[in-house]
Length: 403
Length: 143
Image 1: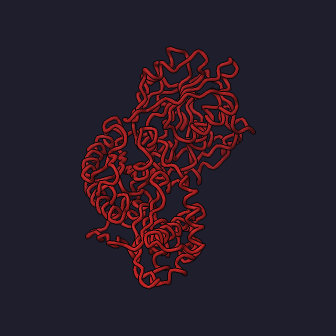
Image 2: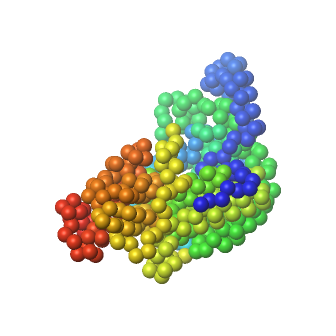
Image 3: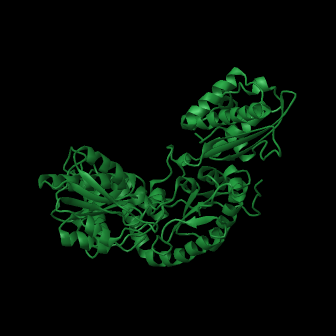
């Protein structure tokens, strides 16, 4: 049975799923709701005050990502931004008779499902491989671009395994070939340096709740001159491209969180990288196991492991009992029969993909937390292997080790 | 709403009859690592009664709880009763399972049937009708 830790800790290690709102973002949201509650489209002072706050927020976002304010559109989050970016680029392509789109096998479903829908509408989609290290190869992108390619969409950092893509290089290839380049930067904004101009990005999606802002808010950056297709009709908001009265308190809170994240970004990244590598080293001592994705080119907060002989959901539930919140790419945690498409895309077979664990550290993570996580994971894996028929077969040589 | 009932959590955290039986009278394994659940049941049978049962499971919380509950439901029971155990009975005894987890209780039912089929086969005994049907279903499933 599991041993109760001498000192039980509570550690939220699922920051890739969502982050807790920062006190400053909450305060900004409350103040805005109290004092800047007007409709930005109204002409009287109360409305114009909200309009001013909204436009100041747009300026701040633009400044942080190296864009012009008019190139920033506020949305309900990353999924909406992804949908609108893809739909818009597809519409532009269709007008020119270009109906080929390139993306990758391990994108977020907001991208993959939209691409599936576009396929039904007559578009052809090429998904680039991401290889064992979870990184797209620029030469493979260059080779995949055709005269009828209208869009390339590649995420900045993967949401499950945290691997960072060579965005600037990929963007340069798209520029050279005259193809629109979109990046889903939901996991990256606030955590990695991003400059849309220097990084050759035409469109970028972001979501506030991944950097301690509120849920239900995000933004889409769209380079000047690229016409957007509306997903939501019904008003002149967001330059007529996204109807609906603006979520001013949410937007202000998002920008507050983004400014804080940017100010602390480099120091947080340096600190987390050390802790991440410590956790990876510790978890490597629970063989047979393997880190998923490149060990270096990954988000400073992300650790993702496969443990052979166990299943991820039971691992998560027992870790929860021990105070640790984490996630898994196991089929049982997704409600489907297949494990994570990301793990399958980097070549993990079903057998081990079911035994995966994603830990995404918080900005306030400590060495003590990391050591606690490693000790509890070791304990739970050993417990589950203790009555796993798969583990018995592996030990007795009736089944081949995969990892 | 919690992910599972208290009973599922209780059996998942403190599974009953975990382990193996050396030289079992019947052993059955169902599921596969592709779908993500494997259950293995070991039976000790004396005078047509399940005198002992143990299990090993690779799977999610509800798979472990279903195995544990299934062993509880057949331990000390006559063979005739054990072979009639249904997945529904397992799920009900656990105060229900989410719809998409019902297959875990099906695996528990099938694992016990597989162990019973193994017992009859090894002993060279004529299988009761229920088990013959279960064996036919399992064979069809294999193909």
